[in-house]
Image: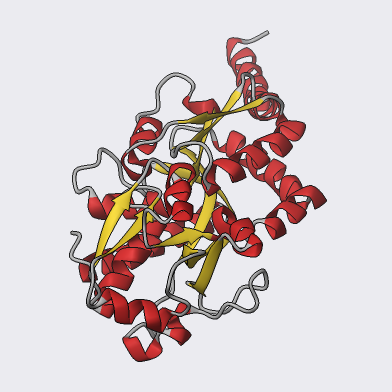
Length: 325
């Protein structure tokens, strides 16, 4: 066989083999345990949601383990993810507003919240709720604001840079009230302080407090979403209840979605997206979302990246108003 013909046949065989190898690689992923990182302590909304997603996700792709890595408003775990390295192609993280707030508050983070990650899919969106202890003397937003303008109040959060923290800071700035932030290592630790009355108020994620509101252990004064939640239909938005106190534009919600280091292969991302579509279509997930007062999100890939980029801009504005920059 002439050398040129032999070389041509080899190149042709290689051209066929490479796409087949790529398809095989995509079909084989994952080849190891998938780690779903929760950048907060156990017990909060991010943790509870992550464990539900992991349980259903492993029915589609194999073993998924949850790891809690709290610290610095989710930036510790996110920084570790962004460094990539060994196991990065099998590691995903449940991101939330802390992902977009952290870079606004901490100026020297070793990563960019938009360009350094693969955005797999936004999973769920949840409003926050302005809640006070059951024995609180305040039964309305107006009463609370009036009191907080004359006496020092405390508000708890799941940590510096969480949407709960930023909601409290925005409320404080927009109303001119006296409020001191009391951060905890996740909502699991913050909740007991709220229930016991050690703090005066919180702007907690709905899943953390919904059962306690329904049982009467906490009083819901308002929701922070634009419209009332179907899960608390008798609780009106803060923007409506506090309009006369300067809160007419107050709208904050929490989103939760899966991201990975930018080094994760596109084939793996696509496998995860297909698996997550099945997870979110599962009736047990729909029931879970309703139980925690959340609504399924729809953004994935580039649309999710754009959503996150817009959220960064929004929190930069909030941080500027609250003088946190």
